[in-house]
Image (tube, rainbow, N blue to C red; front, side, top):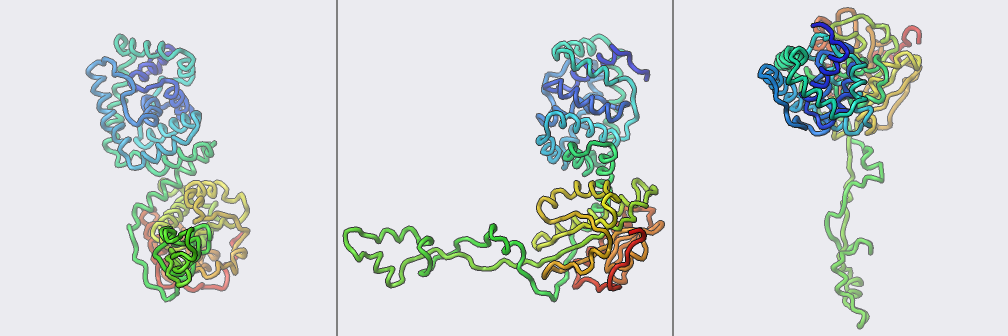
Length: 478
C-alpha cells in the first residue's frame, strides 16, 4: 500500500474520526498523535481514535453511524465485534478505566497512544504507511465540524481513500479472534504509571517485568496448604497500633465507666426527689454499662528478605522473550504477590534488598517498585539498597519468623544463603536448604514456576531451613 499524500492523509484520518463515532475529536486526535510518536508506522489508527471515547463513555456510539459501503460496513462490524467488544469485556479493562480516570488530560492522551501501540504489538499487526504526525497536527488546528464534514464526504465519494480501512479492520478482527487475551498486566501498569515512565527504556522495562511475572504466576497453583507450625503466635501490628482498635461494644455489664453508661438508665433520674432511683441503682451496682471486647488480636509475624545480587545486571543475553535478569525478577514478583495473597491473615512483610552500588540495578529496581507499588503503599513491601551481604548479617525483626532468599546468578554468594532462586547456563533453580527444584531454560516460565513453587512450599513449611554457612560471602566486586 502506497503512502498517502498530505491532503489524502488528512482525509483518511477525518474518515477515521467518522468511523470511530467518538463524542469529541480533539482527545481522539491527540491520542493518535501520541501513538504515532511511539510507532510512526502505526498499523491501525482507528484503534487510537477509539480509545479516548471508550475511556470516557465505556461504549461505542457517541455519534450516529454514517452511511457506509457494504464492504466497509462489514469490516467495521467485524472489528467492533471481535476486537472492541472483547476489549471492553477483558477482566483488566476496569483497572485501565480507573487508572485513566486519575490522569490529567495530556497524560490520558499519551496513555491511550501507548496502549494502542501495545495492542498492535500484541496482535502482531504489520506496519502500515500513510499517516504522518504533521497531518494529524493540521487536523487539530481545524474546526471539528469542518473535519467531520470532510470525513463524511470521503466516506461517500472517495473510495480510493476509504477502501484503505477495509483490509486492516478485517485483519485486526481475525487476529483478535486468535489472541487468548488482549490485555496483560503490562498494559495496566503502563497506563497506571504513564507519568513516571518518561523514557522508552523505562516503559519497556516495566512491560517486560510485568509480563514475565504474569507468565510465571499463571503456572503457579491457586493455593498451597500451609503446614502446622510448632511456633506460637505473636502480637502483630494490628494490636500494636492504637489507631486501629480490635473490638467495639460487645455486651452489657453492671461494671464500667460513666462514658459507657447505657443511655436508657437515665430515665431513673428524678430532679424533684433525691436520692432518686438512679442513685439507688448506682449505690447497689445495678446500673448497666456497655462492655468492650477485650480480646487481643494475635497474628503470626513473618518477614521475608529477598536479597538481589548486584551481579544480576551482567545477565544480558536473550533467553526467550526476555533476558535472564528479567525472568528472575519476574519470578520474585510472582512469589511476593502469591505470598501476600495467601498469607493475608498474617502479618507478612517483604523486604527487597538490591545489593551493590546504588545505580547498579537502578532501572530494574525502579520497575520492581512500580509493579509492587500497591503493596508498598500498604506497608507490606519495602525496597531498598544495601552495599553487600555483610549489611544483612544479624538483622532480625523482633519475634518475626524470618526467611532469607537470595536471587542471582549461581555461585558462591547465592549458594551460601539458606534459600536461593538462581540462574545457571540453561537452567533456573530454586533451592531451600539442600533440596533443589528447577528446569531447563528451554521453557523459562515452566522452569521458574517449578522453582518458585518449591520456595513457596519451603516458606509455608514447618520451619525455614538452617543456613548452610554462618554468613553469605561477599559477591565479586561488592
